[in-house]
Image (cartoon, rainbow, N blue to C red; front, side, top):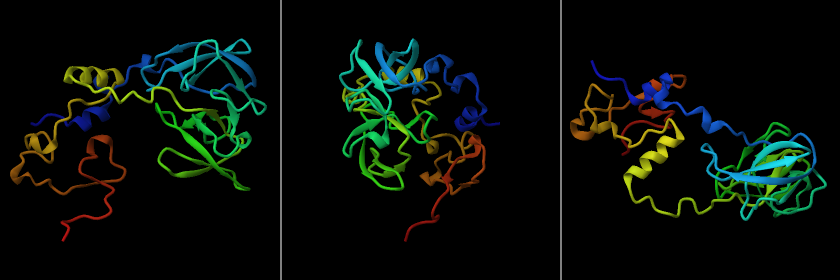
Length: 233
């Protein structure tokens, strides 16, 4: 009897491969009211790669990703009448072309979904009758509702990946803090035949296997939705 594959163990959802609940103790969102708020504190949250700002607006607290050079005590304006300044939250339809934004909503009022990683930024490039076109960090242009909100500026912590990780142990603990991240990753062809479909390394030829599209996580091994199969000639 071979042991369970890593994919199957992760799909089972045990505590070993489950993210800790305290990593999601703070949720980034936009307030339902407009006005002028103030940054009370900049905090570190495990599930976000950038610092999170705790903002008080009309005696209510909400959390947003911090932009570059944000400081405690800074005023944050929310609404269509807010001025064009880093950290302020406005609808996309109120922003001039060329404005750098992040933490963008797809559906107005549903909460921010796009451009949320550290150092990322999108740019308003065009407006027409269909909506507002935003160029994402991937250079893709996406048409969005003018009422969808976004934060002006660039997300902080852009230099997060510049410092090298000199020790394997540090990388291990970084992955463990994220929760559910497998590190170090063992190549499948280096396993035994009883431990993985690609195991034994007989000639180091990976066996051709196409996983079904609706297969559970434990069976998603091999070619996932391949465009073509077979040896290239």
